[in-house]
Image (cartoon, rainbow over all chains, first blue to last red; front, side):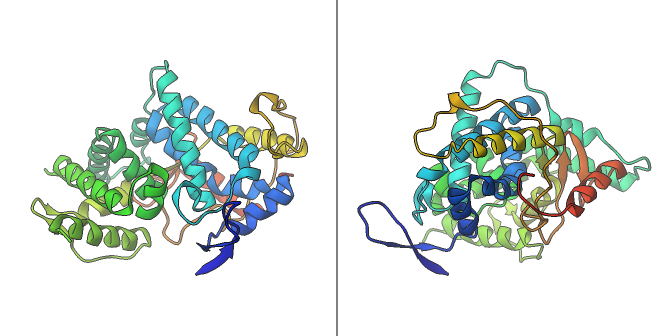
Length: 197
Length: 140
């Protein structure tokens, strides 16, 4: 579905793909309090990306805070373009997150915790044998994902955790959709090797 | 189109199906099946949720920023107001939160709160259900 939307200042109008967040974004531009719905919708996704990237819940909170503060203060300048990093609000928000993560990584001095490992150590009171095998598989998969090179790991997290499309990931990462598909293919091939018994 | 990119394209379609909670045909390359690996990642990679206290504190801070009218172009982050103690804002609706047709792993504040494949501590699940049951609304 395509709508006509406002484009760059030098263009009378451009046709952009329908962005499900457009009504909320327009509402937040008129009434900043309406940004709440966008925050609630995306806070876990942004926090997850930050946590997978830093493995430090405190750093992930710092990143999440910075992302939403930047998004709120920059929302008036956001113009949905239909392509690139301003294609949709969601892509724009994840592009901000990726930049903040990158900056955080450069300045991070904390020793990262391992919340994912902590999570996997939790178990139900009656942990059956079948669950143990499942947990071992999960542990191998998580270890394999964390061992991936940065761009492949980000693509996997954005695809499987945040459930962005390859096109959206390409716009966030500044790559073509095809390049992202190949990136994910290679990442999965690498993980497959780690999961092999 | 090269064989590699053809596999990557078919794999991407398979991942789309898996993320919708649908099963899909086998996609393989020279190293073997890739769909099973994608299915495993779908099942074991949880989405994390921040601590509720953090989420509400940030919501308050954003609300204060909104009331200050900062989205006007040119506002700098250095001028952000301090968090203002306010009643807890109600949670957005399940739809607005992006709950999916397929239940997925969700780890809240370092404890698994809901999931499909691993473990489901009842206390965490209860918190999530409480949050989901709260009505939708704005900041307050």
